[in-house]
Amino acid sequence: MIRTVLRMGDRRLLETAKPVEAFDTPELHALLSDMLDTMKELDGAGLAAPQIGVSLRVVIFGFEANARYPEAAPVPYTVLINPQLTPLSDEETEAWEGCLSVPGLRGIVPRWSRLHYSGYDAFGRRFEHEVDGFHARVVQHECDHLDGILYPMRVRDFSRFGFTDVLQAGSTPEE
Image 1 (spheres, rainbow, N blue to C red):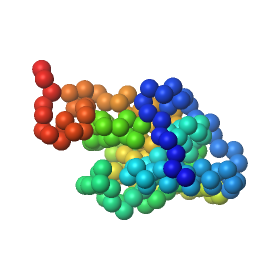
Image 2 (tube, rainbow, N blue to C red):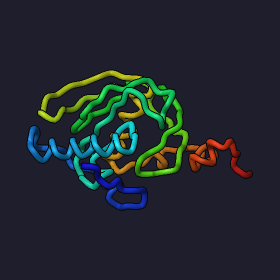
Image 3 (cartoon, one colour):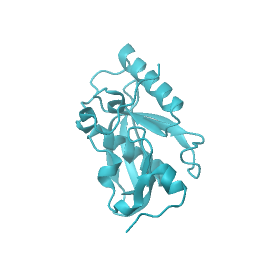
Image 4 (spheres, rainbow, N blue to C red):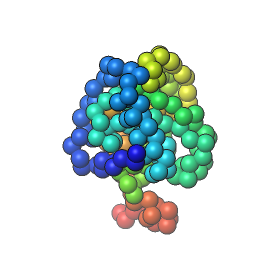
């Protein structure tokens, strides 16, 4: 079922989500199914449970190709529950980000370039990965939602933040 995505300004997006305590339940599988339907319908690269009003530490992400990020390499579809993220170096990369909860806007956001993440799948099996590039960016973006952080909170230079249609038209910010 396609769910409504909360938009910036909704206080629920600023809350810290609760850990999942029960795995392989009908409720968890239904949540994951709804999240996948919603993400695909909106052509998202990922989605966090708090974005649909569910305060649980659950994110999904992945795509073969994404029109919103045409330059991005494919990211394998992943269910990540109760994630833990660790940077593999202090190196950061800046790149454009958007968000289904912040429609119509984009900004340059710094993220760790390389990342180790671990967590659980829907059945409670623990796994871990080391990633870089866009994959690392997507994981960090989605996991930020679990701590009540929206990407505009990470923008450092607001001359590189704006409405997508204006940015695509090549307009420059007024001094």
